[in-house]
Length: 265
Length: 372
Ligand SMILES: Cc1cc2nc3c(=O)[nH]c(=O)nc-3n(C[C@H](O)[C@H](O)[C@H](O)COP(=O)(O)OP(=O)(O)OC[C@H]3O[C@@H](n4cnc5c(N)ncnc54)[C@H](O)[C@@H]3O)c2cc1C
Image (cartoon, rainbow over all chains, first blue to last red; front, top):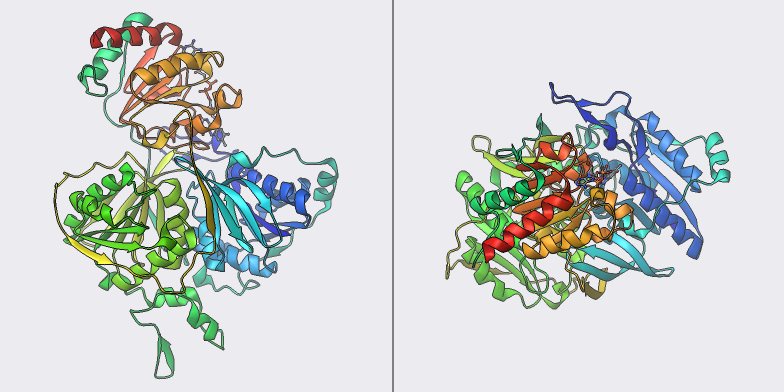
């Protein structure tokens, strides 16, 4: 089975701080990491390869520094990588991103299975996986938490829903996005790390991919961000200054007064 | 599509199916160019649509919220509010959608739509969009919505904003102003889709206000037929509902969340008791989940569930940004923490600096008293 894992390099949002005065993100010195959900995608691919054999390729779009993320993936035991990098790609929304990724998948000769993390932690949209599947005309199952069967022509996967899960048969070629439950990522292997050190990450720009500048990046995007602001803490805020037990009783009274909870019928 | 003066012209009827790309020998067309060519879509698209998700013939609460908000947007735009319902033996739900404010309901009722398969659902929705050209389409940011709607937006070649918490209309430009948290909730961003139509958004459950229910309201019912050869590529073999403890966090009105401050798995007994007393469900921080104190299904936050209940109570929760993004749209937030500097207090409606093992039992005792 040939698997392509899409992965994104993101700022480590755990350490992103908001400037309290300007409400802008302080990004200096924030480390770049592989999107945590994409590590689950990578882990899923490694487990599938262990089960049925085949090759794993990783595909990423990003600035030249994102080659580091691909090298890191090589360390986990991935076979090949491709970085889509071009200044024209900057500012892409999910529509323009899937345009580039779809071209990247074709450039890599397609795959039996494409795996994406359920979402990237910087954008949190969860749109790229399903959008990419549509672009490539592939069937999809999102939010996959595990699989029950892997065959040459299909997978039987478990899809997380709000109220439980569905068992879904996905014919291949197809695309899945995965959640944490597919398995905790293993650490990179020593052998992989050695290979990663020397690995030259292949890169492709818009021209190589046969994409015009109008199709990608900001120019190729449908959506525009018009305003960015600090989240408003809604409503009033109050610290209940009282000894613990008294405070506990008081807060219930406040909640009853606010009709946030009901007593009696 | 047609040829005019030897040039390919895309007509309004284009569904962006992509067939033209396959037949175009010169490679002179791309889906993007086709999409741009129809971006006079803004001029002739009208109406606000709500995707009325159903599972097993049940409409989740978010559908009522979407119709409430959709109604307000439609009034601002001076257009009709419609709902789209896909499924099998679901036509009976149309009456409920009228009562919730839909003026037109499109129903595709077919055995092939009984279970949720992204591909066929997206095909049907994209075709309806191409035929009827709504200017706005809203769906719930549920598991189903977040899986399906990006595929539909791509099929319809339009923009999509995920997980919105605010929607408004710029009347002059007939634009939907879509506000959502970004960057792990550190910032809010307002996003527009100036050219393409429909302007599509998924909306977080429990954020929008429901409209006034109109019992017995009637409207226009439009039946949608599937093509005879239409079939889903994926196949749902089994539907498994969460059994035992109900962890439907997203739909809960009250969520009591336990963090590492509980001190151990037995701390969740207190959380459970509180949740039970308030008719709510149990949530957890990743800190608590990672320690194995409770299952991941309970996790609230960036890598867990996003919730927006009427009441959130956090016991021993520090309030890391990854947690806050998943709960800060809660209506009322109560936080109990021994550390006065814990970030959770920044978003708390009521903050109590104190030991949860003293505060929470006192809360329970007071509740019992009041209930007699
Ligand atoms: C990529 C990424 C994704 C993440 N996703 C999530 C997510 O989805 N959800 C999530 O929750 N976290 C997430 N996290 C983790 C997050 O950063 C925090 O580590 C986590 O939320 C902390 O959990 P906590 O509040 O239970 O623990 P701590 O941060 O350890 O807080 C415990 C709190 O309890 C208080 N306390 C201690 N004893 C008592 C007592 N007796 N009474 C009252 N208070 C007491 C302490 O003062 C402290 O504030 C994510 C992190 C990363 C990097």
